[in-house]
Image 1 (tube, rainbow, N blue to C red):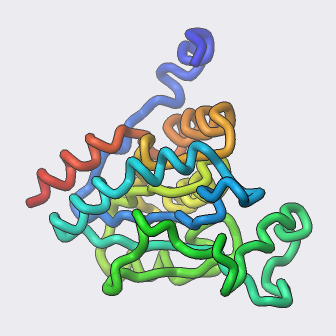
Image 2 (image 1 turned 60 degrees about the vertical axis):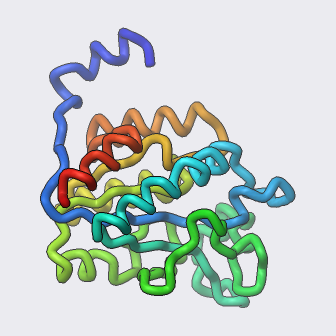
Length: 209
């Protein structure tokens, strides 16, 4: 990030929100369509994010931090895809029975963990996520998953707007290209939450025990 850009934001868009007392990890759309090279959705940055995420998930589970997963699935008629599928018809791969719609095994949900199915970018839009987190007493949302410029950004904005401290684990999110990845992390960190390294999140989980 250029010095001019950093200087332009300094003192205006660089506050820190920090961690709260009751976190949850939300693992967003870690599906095979983003990691299989034969898929049009393939994103090299997501492959790296999947590799970085098991350690964070393992520590969360060890420290009794809840983990919630999201996936994208459409009705076979795509009636629930709306305008998004007109804009991005590549997402039509996300139907039951398509291998691209399956979870990546390294970061797959445990049987006891909640999976929320969505049709749009934000994990909050059209789902019970906000109500679920409120009922759990959560104050801090840790986001991992993909893609940074799409579902991660949309979920980060909505998490903040629902009143949660929003933390994005930089190593554990990915995108198709580094430029939108970095631009969106910069924007999230400036306006909507904190972008931190995975190990900082792991240290935070350890401090809760």
